[in-house]
Amino acid sequence: MAQHADQDLPFQLHALQLLTAAVEAGEALPRHFAYLTDRCQVAQQQEQTYGTQYFDNNKGYYGPRPIADPDRLDERRATVGLGPHAEYDAEIRARYGYPPATSEETGR
Image 1: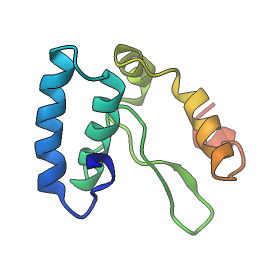
Image 2 (image 1 turned 45 degrees about the horizontal axis):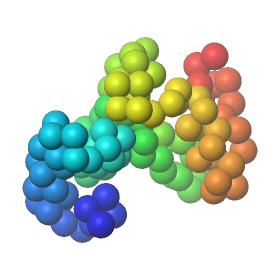
Image 3 (image 1 turned 90 degrees about the vertical axis):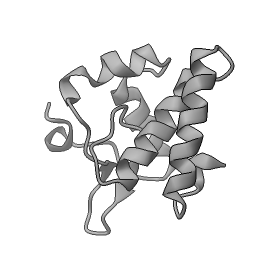
Image 4 (image 1 turned 90 degrees about the horizontal axis):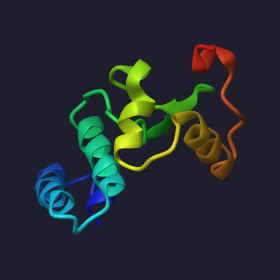
């Protein structure tokens, strides 16, 4: 519920605090923390940490919102039980009917 409460950032931030404590206590999955962390960061116009949040600019671009320190992204994702970002990217694009990322988009 908190993940999709985009119109209520204070609620999301409070939920993130509770979720952080729950993850530390072993009562919640770290990947849920990652998704909500990114969602809150994006809502605050910050770069996301785990690369989970995507957007379509309606001008031919579909991809992740800006990511902090992209060179270490997969390391951070691994710490919360998420797979490599390239795999996630391919899955998300396929799920929503977008073509695979171009080499220009991936930097490869």
